Image (cartoon, rainbow, N blue to C red; front, side):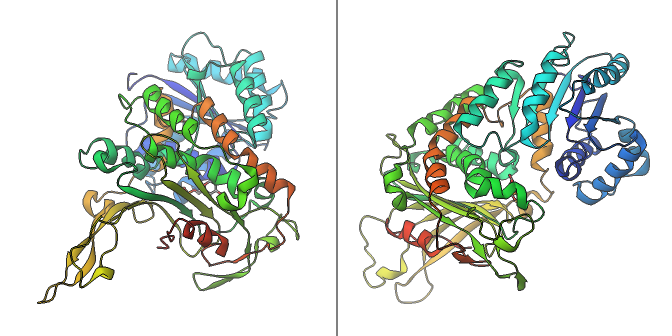
Length: 494
Ligand code: BG6
């Protein structure tokens, strides 16, 4: 890839939240940081009727509100805005596509190249239509440059629908052209998991069943469903977070070293983890999975309504806003090491982290203070306090041999000073550069659904009469504590 490879990005669903909060602000920040290849054009389309000028004004506001780099200097903004245009139209109607083609034709003549990156930022129900029309209209096959497509999550709602979507994409694009986004993979700290594991010699020897007692992966949010009640009703925590973000994190922790940090080797290794995950036995679900739904409560000292009182949510909703799983990776490295995953909305803190809890020392020589020695714990803090810490035992100063846990702490903000780029910045740049390492491959997505399908089916069939079973502002239902306690563990609640 050359840094001055001209390209056009065509965003479907451009009047929506994703474009406003994430995509345009990320493209702007890349541009303002001089990392976006030039020249480029951003062709936006959605049903809302708007002129180029109106769209640019809206995006100027979004950038002011959401971009990492702001406020934009007016001159630089004007240059960026000149590359933005808007084509109103219904993506389910074939009429839109010749109009897009016309606009693209003019733009590409000026750019001198026909490299196209399509972005499906619409509700998933429109993906099929968009892909089909991109194929039949010929837009997906300019023949004069590269063509790629980014597909937002949720990628399907179960195995069957994910397969159907993969097939639909495959009828128009080759797998190398399809970029399935999972924004967690674009987070700096998530990428750092691989650096921690594979650029340091000291972790690999202990990264296995001989030293690791269990692994916890927590993605906790304080927010509720905000304005997305009707989407969330159909999704729930398992589909919204577990199937993608948490399972991706698990793969990065559990995978074998890839030969190089490139798309195929990395994604091959992640697939092997998925294949090694023990299928979930629906008859033993109570030992493996816990679901929860928040009732009213207090978060950050503020009273908040229960899930069933949120806008767009049914008063007797059975959708889970919390999910915890106990998974096992049946491999030589991980045999017998449980992986506990949990995610929920309206929990006490916004925190995403991975906890590697090591075994106790085999023999304690400091007999006077046996209680003082906790096993070592490595915490990889994904957000918000990005960094890692390792807890070790130390001798307390004084004549007696008393022990105390101390923490060796690395904080991204303190060490590197600068603000990390947004996940979308990294991911968009990678797709423009043709690097799919941080994107999900079709077979991975299907395996993730295949793993969770038995839980989705069982939960869909059997309502949970205990809902709502945790108060907003609590760490989820008590059954989740029992889930980890059966293996002698406790959740780390930061
Ligand atoms: C999205 C989910 O994928 O991730 C949202 O759909 C969730 O429900 C969000 O709030 C969390 O992302 P982040 O980057 O804020 O942890």
